[in-house]
Length: 196
Image (cartoon, rainbow, N blue to C red; front, side):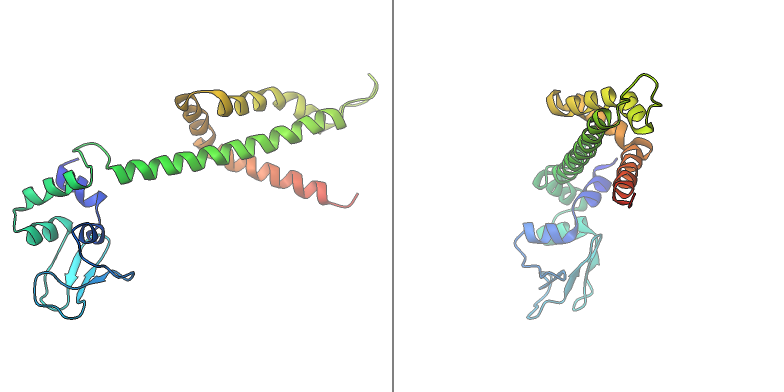
């Protein structure tokens, strides 16, 4: 990805304006730095800016170039340096967003797997056949089939390296496996609450 596209995808005009000392309201309005402006007349959108007073408009690179009186190339380089962006590499904010999502996914996977593991452990004890002639309860069978695998996955999320945890999380997120397991847990809870 070219530095211009990388910068535009990573830095909204409002963040740049705040970084360069402008006061931006919650609704994205600020006093235009390009003309005498007593009342905020510039609106900062996610991908461009527009001044309703002097009609200045453009993207974050245009804004920075005009603010500092430089070329668009120099403005793109300045934004890249100020916001930790390297060409072809994600910006620091983008990396942090990815990390936050990965951390949230890890918490979700750990919670769901641990909850299912706990249910399986209970089922293996509660529904175990009492005599060799007893027909095994389907819950006991499910516990016998799944318990070791779930224990292993919970252990991986507890004691392994970040790379190994990421592999487990990615495998659980792939093809909505974690969503299907959440639905399975919901069904188990509903069945447990049904009157017998």
